[in-house]
Amino acid sequence: MRWRVLILVLLVGGVAGCGKKGPPRPPLPSFPAEPAAGQGRQVGDMLEVMLTLPVQRRDGREIRDFRGMKIYRRVARVPEEGAAPVAVSRSPAAREQDPVKVVSGPELSDLVPGGTFWLRETVASALGDPDPSARYRLTYTARYLLKGGGWSPPTRPVTLLSGAEVPPPEGLRAVTLNEGIEVSWTVAGDGLATAIYRRDPGGEFPFQPMSVVPPGQVSFTDPTVATGRTYLYGVRASWQDEPGAPMSAMAGPVTILMEDHFPPAPPEGLQALARPGGVDLFWLAGHEVDLAGYRVWRRLPAGDWMLLTPVPIAGTSFSDEDVRPGEQVEYGVSAVDQNEPPNESPRGAPVTAELPVAPPPPEERP
Image 1: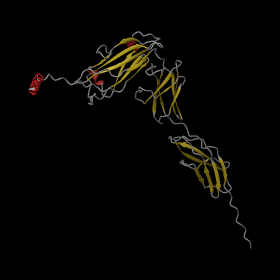
Image 2 (image 1 turned 90 degrees about the vertical axis):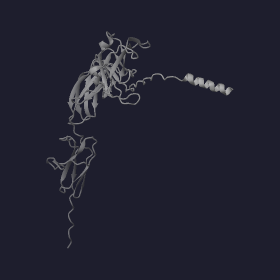
Image 3 (image 1 turned 180 degrees about the vertical axis):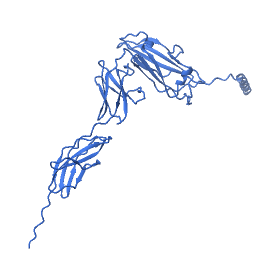
Image 4 (image 1 turned 60 degrees about the vertical axis):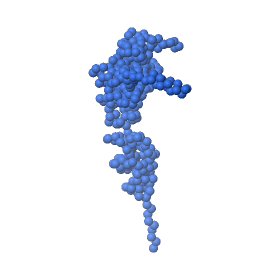
């Protein structure tokens, strides 16, 4: 009897659980994968934000194009030491309201997967009428719209600091040295670090500087240049007390052609060893990176210097076998580099040698 009741209960439960399936649910939207972090800075009276665009969706599929982008901004006044931050304005990325930039229509062609998108706005448009003695922290986020999905969650924030405009360096100049190109300037305020930028003719200065020197340093030598190439340099001043600190407008550019007018150092340690039939010369090797070789010179008493090696030799020794016995000869060695035409050093300290005279043959006895 009990097993009949159990079967009846199972049948009733099965009938009660049976019914029509509900409408199919739409697939969850596939949002873009988190791109690399962007960068931001204040340059003069302009705010520059560089956003890196994603290349894949979160499900691994590649992004072919974007249907839209919205950029949001939050502003907070940087508090004094120990005080709480004070919000100045807010454009929440979590809700679709008050974007500072909407990319749509023809501007969508600027959104290239894996590329960058620049937002540039003035300090006045972002802060209104800021307190010139205060500093502000601005945070930018973006949301993307892809085909077949809604607006993505906000990206990782890009944060920068804004404050009083930093005066640019002055008196920018560049000169060629044996070690490279030296760039120098004067700063317009105390405590300012300097960022150095370099570009080729026709190019643009990169976002990141090639070097940043601390306050008090007013020159920088670039050793990575190549002879015969033209370079353009620019510099910006910055407080550099934390990432994203305000920077000055670019000073420059200054254009310079890297030319090599600097010969190697004169060879040192020249020694001469006279022997029957000739004179052997030895000297110390130079250490210049562009050293091509050496030229050996000879001078007779009251004569002029004569070049013995029209083609520079790579080694640090030479044998002169065109010497008369008993004749006093002076030698010198110079160094040349790989420049065309080559730069030649002065001759190093000369040395004197005298080929010994062979003794007369012994007299024959009758």
